[in-house]
Image (tube, rainbow, N blue to C red):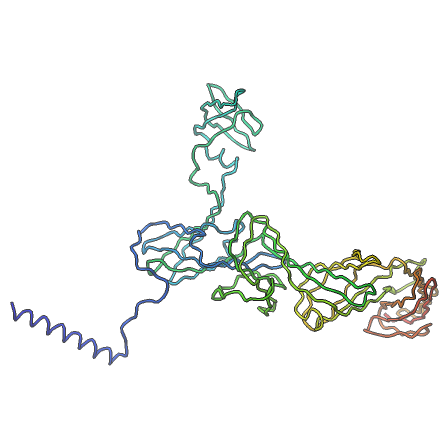
Length: 486
């Protein structure tokens, strides 16, 4: 017996030595245990595993100004080796399952995706209980409840035909008897459930990253301009409005706001990086030809929520105010004179001193204080997306005291493709101060100014520009003759 034990020990030692020599020859090393969040615990080999918000380690919402939002989260789930279905609860009700991206600490082999979203509405419950017995309950005069048993024969459009006490009755929402369902049908769910048919190569508790698109979440920007008394400077405030038009609550979410074209394909999680500190809406960064802004801290978006967060604030920003009349010269003879509005145009540079940061598109409202310091709404306009260094030009409205009248005073056809036109633009100022009004005319084809009462500029090929000073309570007239060639 002793000799046998010695032989076994020697054999084991020789085997280990041979394995070591083989490792030196082939260059292999012993395999290290897989690193990560796996927990060594016994897991039931269940066919179905449910994961709800309690498993969530991180939630990131990326909101666009239009189109679907991107929802990305990390969950820690327990996967048995024979698990076949991972049911994800607490997902957005408006999820687009075809956009799902899923990765995990282990290798996940997804066989199929199914969205269960048949919820217990009146029609769905009536249809599920068709042919089954239900309880009928109504309130009596003394405040107690009377109860009967019946069987739903058929149902549709919120009403049911019920067989009760040997006869048929139609029961709808206005009927004194109400139908009580004692159990939830198996195929109905109280909230959407995303069912993933999958297998995992390693059992245990582990993290998974999922990302998908969902409708009903977006954001917009509202700008407020307060002009000083003379309109030469302004204070600019911007508010980011976050909207949750879904029935889903998003708690403790890191939120990113994307300005630019809507994302149509979700990107994988960016290592779920921590949000940056800063203002209510933090610094921006360029991502995929768009700008992304990060909120300074996680927050909750409740169902039906609309929250306003300060986006930026700038004071004493220089503003240029301009009054314009814009007209168009078509080919051919024109009829009677036409009145044109004299519009107010405000412009400022998106530089320092000023906003000096990317400005997403949004609605801008202009206020100006009156003699008593009360703010008066002067108008609003849509601000286009403006990068840093560009000029912002807005047209919040028209000037009440300024009017313009345009008319063609002469027309001659010189050749088949050439004609000569004479125009008059009469400007009036009913205010108590003189105003400079810019007249911009859009001209067709090739054109040459032959005569003019004031010198013009040519800012671009199809446009002529004049500046005229109109005295208080007076008028000024621009006259010009032009040759246009088709």
